[in-house]
Length: 324
Image (cartoon, rainbow, N blue to C red; front, top):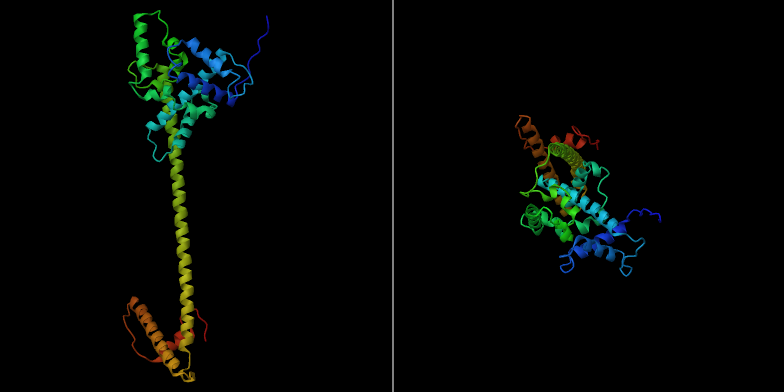
């Protein structure tokens, strides 16, 4: 008898090819119904290994191998969909679709069979919304009606063939993907004590993960707030320094005008203009000096036009300006 060699592992390209073949046949309204399970998988085997297909066949795969591989893929996809619904039921505020998917993958690793994570990202996009999974959320879907018909036929005829033998799109492994995938069905058998404990443990671990994420988000918010406050304080200080520089520059230019000798200006118009500017500067500084004295409770206002009262100011007394 010839020795049998074990097939090599499936590549990502082979997984994609298998999923496309599976979807083409299971969702075909002509060939996807009213055929036995063996006929269904025989057609998948033929199409998968068809040399005329666009996919380059590197290794022929038997029907049993294709069925087992598809079971593994659909089981993992169904598990991840169940985890996504658990995360969505928590209504995480501000979470995007990618955030929910990442948290669901984290939750999936709590399952002993998926501790290494979800390994079928390369087929997730083409399988996540197929009719077999999408019908789970609809209590009156064809999927659940067929389950009910299957249960009633079993009670009437215990030796009758399984529903999956006549409906290849709902193979035997597709009915056992995940307890959460068929959640809400009135015909669902209550979970046992061990499963209840495991579910409670998973819920507690999920709550811990979500609390950790929430705490880290809060820390990030506090860091951002502190950074904004520091930037605002630095901005205010810079503005204050700039205003002080501008005020010093104006004070210096005004001093130049006050020190001008009017008799040395030959142009009468320019002399008159300079005299008016000196008066304006004196009045402005008198008002500033009066306001400063009023804030200290003195309340006195000096209206004298004597130039002597400004002499100390011009010399730099009481400020940081050098003497002229």
